[in-house]
Image (cartoon, rainbow, N blue to C red; front, side):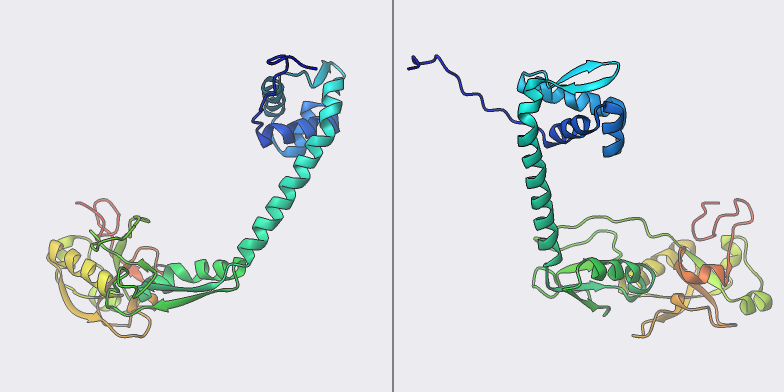
Length: 277
């Protein structure tokens, strides 16, 4: 019969990463081979095993030039560590199954330009990973009210988004520049300065937010906007510039960049829309 306080039960919080390194070294006989099995360095494998020994207060291996050999304590814990590994694998498989089972409809409102130039490959990969999720795309120019449940997610170009109860994140800077067709360049030349570009007409568009950004950019540099694309068809900058029309303001990563003429600054060689000369 034990007297009070004669026995002590110790709760040990083990790190699963330490345990799996212990298993790899026990199975291979060395930290070098164990590290290779887990695709980590030998130093990491040795450090993880030492961390587990400190946590348990036990020596799990006898170390020698020949490698690592389990002690009696290590042998006693090997079976339990194996069961932990099996449980972890079962948990991971169940989580993956739950992820694959995710379904429902997500309403995404954005500008048509972003659907064509950015979202297409992303949505393809999303469908491959979660085929039961249905994406409803809304590419109208009207800004939907997320708080009023008009959409679930919005991807918009905006300087300062407004609206109560919304959570937003800036994804990236959206660099734009100006392009024209080779036919227009042959007829009118390619401007190399802001002053020269002001003699040409601009065509903006690509959605309400993008059109507003284009207008601000044109106003700030003294450019004149002759027309703007507001149709429901693919925006002008997703296709080649119409021969002889005008300059178009489009994303620098637009597909037309490789098939049209860009206005570059004579001094710094950067796109005129982006240079500060």
